[in-house]
Length: 286
Image (spheres, rainbow, N blue to C red):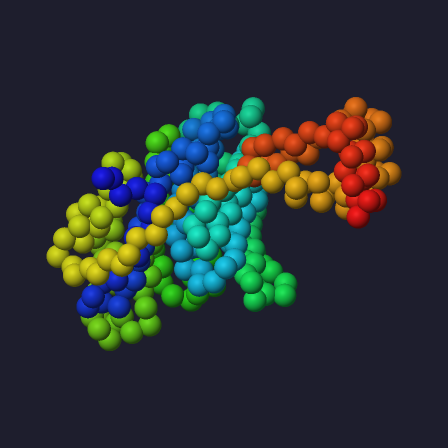
């Protein structure tokens, strides 16, 4: 059975280098379903889906990690959100008239920032960090982020197409040079043989074996990844209640209904005047 939609953590036994690999298929197809993304936008979102999954796999407790790429280019916003159960959701905003021809990642994104928001059960206030968009690819941008946040040498390989989104994460641990002074250099040279089409064509463990044929690698238990964006009408009802009856009545008077757009899950919530009246009537009764 193909081993897609699972994060595979691993360790180079004699090198003190850790890693993880993933190839999203069903989860990626579900995440982009119903979205008419141009190919350059879809590829960016796919690569970001893979790297977000790899990083979120390190969450040790209940929580949610959200990455946003915000730029001044034609693709002005990419959002990926993943929880500790590796349930993924995400979206992209772009200017339709500006996605034309072959354009590199810096041209697509423009100047901007990578923002992380981390919210776990033991945090009173979510943790947030910002770094500038630095690099010529999504992998470069996240390598720069990880170098600043974790201060450990890190390499990322990312690829995406219409069918799959894949990522490989490698990180040099503090004692790596003591274990093998040439280990990290050797692994980096092997990475230079990588091709995006291989990452998308091969199953994850096949790719590991092909890339690092002569290295001893211990692969740990895989963890499933899914696209998870269920309807939550009750949450939207709470939002309307927070707006208050007067504000909701003003919206109804202007539009004839209240429309709440959930971009992240690609879903609209519509409320008729009768539904809004029932909402506030039930609130009054309680």
